[in-house]
Length: 475
Image (cartoon, rainbow, N blue to C red; front, side, top):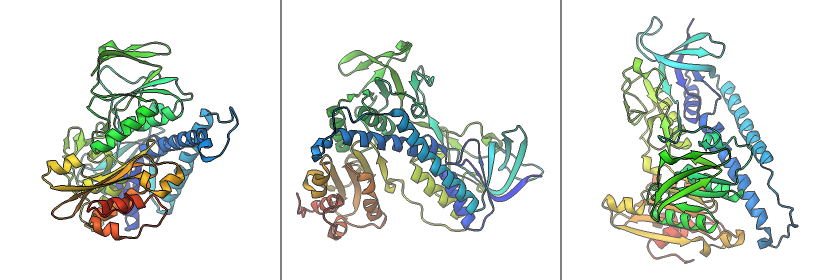
């Protein structure tokens, strides 16, 4: 007998489980089908485990700099035990995983572990959208629902000629499982994932080469942010190469070393390291899930949806990385909630993609939302900017983290905030105030007039907002 529910969710990542919980809160019967573990990439292969490793790297670096704060650490007392680092990471993931399982029970969401495919009309349902699920024991189960939400996520992209083998050529998934650190690594791709891994591994004492095909790191961020990060990474010892074209046909893989020829701005060079990490983006998990049995449309490998997550079959929704757009965990969660609410009859205005905060957990951190300076000019805005270095902020001096700045971009005519860009310690915790200002259509003056407590890092944002009109007190 088929399992019948109001809402079926294909994929138990953050987009899927957020949709499931919200649908259950709205009184719907819900089932999630997940082939692996609830939590998806974010919990098990992305956000949480990588940030746990980054935290260990941060603490390790801070201890090595303890004398700066008047604290003497005995010779040889600071040592890295990477096995314990990995153990702490797994403990963090396991605790959150257990909590997620409890949320499923609390909200009476049925969890089905198996590999599912969307099927066409059947004796159970006159329209496509039912799921055929192959369970772990090989048995088959059918899930029939009034509405289906597809949340199958994404996986690391590979490059022709550079196929990951999990030992020498790694994806970020593979890197999370390393039992020991290599002496050196070549990271291919200077986007968010590449930058985070470069920062982390450098802090752990690995010799890092970061190779980016574009003219600069983080091409989606403001050019000043990219330049500042590049300067800081180089100062810490990371070898940063941009405008790099790898010659995949000249890849050589040995027992303990890989090498590859590359065309760079300085001519052809041979890049060598113990391991190579590919961080060249992600592709949607949209193949092999039965979309051919539906009228759901795809474009460039991603599922096409409207502002509420509806596909070309209105009872089938899709959210998260499998639809492209802003491939961030919090964006997927928001999309999942929006889809569930639309199914429940709640129609809220869609959030503009540029208002979604972006965070990079490198050292230093980067956070932003809205348009870059170049992007604002391209769209025809007459802009004005305010910029405050953390060197001007008392709390930054107290903490010993004075690198970086906060930059605000506004429209000169309308005074609308167009974008906020930050680089420095703890800026991923500061961006929410700026994003709220964008959501509420606040002006720089209004944010600047709010009294920011002293001494805090948040003063940098308030002062940058005032600096847009030349009113900063601190700088």
